[in-house]
Image (cartoon, rainbow, N blue to C red):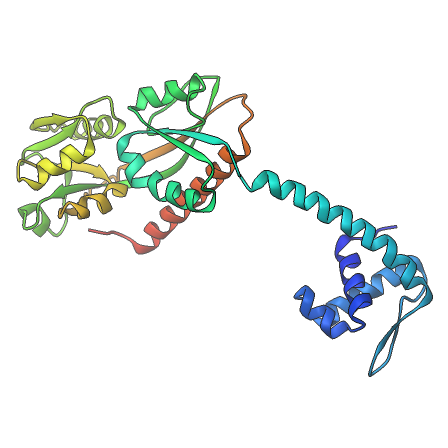
Length: 309
């Protein structure tokens, strides 16, 4: 016999309510769909379950027998659902997440906030590390999940590009670069730069792009924290180049961002790094799913909006 849980749920609802209309409302189905499910059961068993009339629905002899067994099956399923729900309720546990300070602020913080509001009893440990340190922390098991922008060649790790962002220049309000209709990479080297140390992937990407254009970046100040870089830009000491996910933070500093254009669009790719083989906790799996959903939605929205300056 080929009996489905959907058929049993529809049958039990009609049996209890003695109404296809009311059962349909409870199950959020159409009346015809509920009637069809019950008819399929009747066909499987080869006997009528309900006597239908214009005013009422009566249960036939076999209906009470089936209801007892169906209720037992659905009760066992509800018990299993409650047990699994308890596992997914995340009443305890911890997750270690590693990424650069820039990614932590621009890409992870909102997911962390949402996850914490949903599962306040799960401990979240944010490891703000350089690119190489992030890879190492995932490799040695210190971090459950890592985000990097680097090619990782390590058999014990799985990496997948999960997000990419175009590059922007960050300037104080009124800066002459902001008045340009189309901002190109050669335009940037006419100004002093404030850069991150080269242990961070953003700095490495910018250096690579400038080298491809045979350009030399006049970096007057190097810093280890993004907040330090933005504060110095705010003080008028130079400009800086960042991925799009930093634009919101830059705006909080009172700074303005503008998309960098060119014959070739350069994107800052972000990869998720996981240790393999490894059995991740349910909490880590749930966080990973939420993070992936957020990044994909963010990237899709950005592409729909087009260029943002």
